[in-house]
Image 1 (cartoon, rainbow, N blue to C red):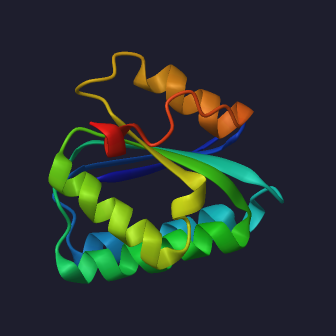
Image 2 (image 1 turned 120 degrees about the horizontal axis):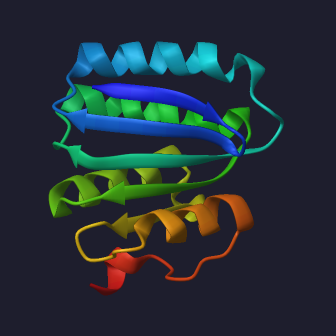
Amino acid sequence: MYLIKPVDFGYYLTFAGFIDEEEMQSWHNESKRALEDAPEAFGVFVDMRTLRPLPPEARVIMEEAQAFYKDKGMTRSVVILNDPITTMQFKNIAQKSGIFEWERYIDASTTYDWKEIGMDWVINDVDTIGRILEII
């Protein structure tokens, strides 16, 4: 399951459960339509707290989509996770897509104020915890 919600700072994305190649491609196609009217610069808040690790085919599409978001004007993104395997997977995808430098990762299972911290990064460029999962 996925959701793309336009918000005042850019986009709020939700990914949950198991997402296969077909559903990931649907999300990427919907993202292309949603970003047609994107501002010149925008942030992305991604809630992946209940997402299961992606199969290889879906990872390839996610990598392409992340690069697309960056090309369309994404300046910063934050990813909220609960699972260490999914976290490592998305760090790897971000490195391959070229967005790792602009992305932060927050473990919601250990950070009670994850939403506030994530919004500080995306909206205000305030990195209060850095790459928190790298020090845990």
